[in-house]
Image (tube, rainbow, N blue to C red; front, top):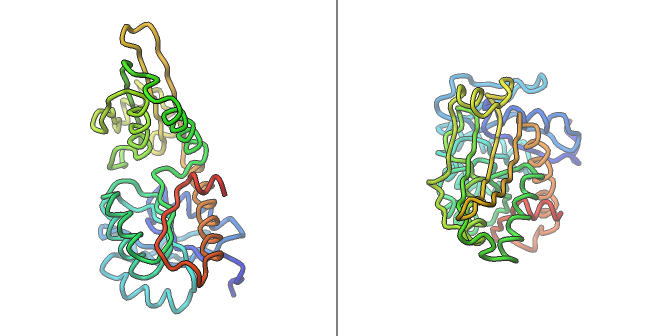
Length: 282
């Protein structure tokens, strides 16, 4: 019998690497209970995933409408955690909203404007963030503060943004794209399609010097600002090896969302979006 004090979490995206790491974090944390169902992609050949000796049923898109009825009967007030695939972002969001499931969306890509519109048109609350690493989010907040407080501080400077992730990451880093807007405010014209995106393992190992053990799971970002005359350079980097840093941030986001839902029961029935900045502020 599961304690009613635990938060029921549906971890979607298994057996993906990011989801697997985050699932392990939730399974090992006494605050949470991972329900034995996970939304997965149509290409996944296995039907189950073992998590700490518990059997998780992998639910394909064609099965989820039927499966959610069983889930609703067995578990109340679940929170979904989404680390699936960019192509599934909007359909998964619609599924959560249609079934009144609050969620944490860590998957990047998809139509972000539609994502927000879908949530706000429904009644669920969600944490949506392109990056669940609290320290990186804090760094972004510092750059945002500088952009809002000192607009055009770097006017006339050139910007280079380079990001490297494992070969399987399909889209450009959501964190890098979010940073573009801040540097624009600081006076540097720059577009998302100018981001240098590295996915070649050989380049990552031999040119970027990323440790070989983390070629299959890393997030290295460098932002270089150079003056017009090349006589001044500012460089900011955040290099993450592995995925454990995202697990803690995601658990904090779920705990935060659960608290917000508990505080708003029978009071606020409107859709609402929170960010990781909201989570950090608590």
